[in-house]
Amino acid sequence: MAQAEPLRLADGPYLQIAEQPKQRGFRFRYGCEGPSHGGLPGASSEKNRKSYPQVKICNYQGPARVVVQLVTASQEPHLHAHSLVGKQCDKGICVVNLQPKESIISFPNLGILHVTKKNVSKKLEERMTDQPLYVFSLPQELQRNLISNAAMSQSKEMDLSVVRLMFTAFLPNSDGGFTRRLDPVISDPIYDSKAPNASNLKIVRMDRTAGCVTGGEEVYLLCDKVQKDDIQVRFYEDDDTGLTWEDFGDFSPTDVHRQFAIVFKTPKYRDQNLQKPISVFVQLKRKSDNETSEPKPFTYHPQIIGKPRSL
Image (spheres, rainbow, N blue to C red):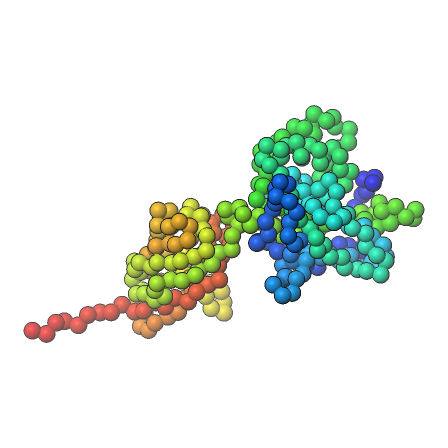
């Protein structure tokens, strides 16, 4: 397929993501592990109601070709070394033809093949050289050694635990060839479920859900798997206007036990002269990507001022 210039017309056809992929809970697989069981689910997918990533060509009715590639989650996207696998996938990309009467296309069988770290540069070089659909390619006149250098440079910075889907639609020209390229759209990040920072955060249980406004009280918190250097216990309060208070539990990495329990001390509440109990929220927060767990209620009680002892 010849390289095509993006099609940009006022009120003309454009590509839109109708359903994002689910960001967490899907595992990237190595080639030696065999095929994946089930495709990449959509963001709204549930156990008894499966859904998958979808795109829609707006302001258009007719045949089209949609190409899906993996790109990096970096601010400036580059092709990723991982590969898409499954039906209608070849050499790491997926190509699907849209029928004339359709406007939405679903991708129910996408798997993600994890390249080994030592092969990242080689795979990138192959992809840059072989794929005419490579949107972010170097100009054709540049020599292979420049492509090799670019692949080597990108491989050093590539995060193998996260990818995004890049969808590109091609409309037919007057000869029927799919050369009229619409601007590509890029999905939300997809995190490899076996990567250390990819698990969903969840508070399972706390041994206390209330404490004094003075803080400093010890709490045992059980949780799903966390990384000891990448986790916070966040206390916060909000109202109709937004966030009104925020502070964090006090603990060190040595207080995180086997990735499933945290022993921390509660922070001081913002009002030390509280006259009646007040409910706030507590949640886990991952430092690296600001991901948070579902919040749990926590009640702060006023200070108890002891009465003088009678003689």
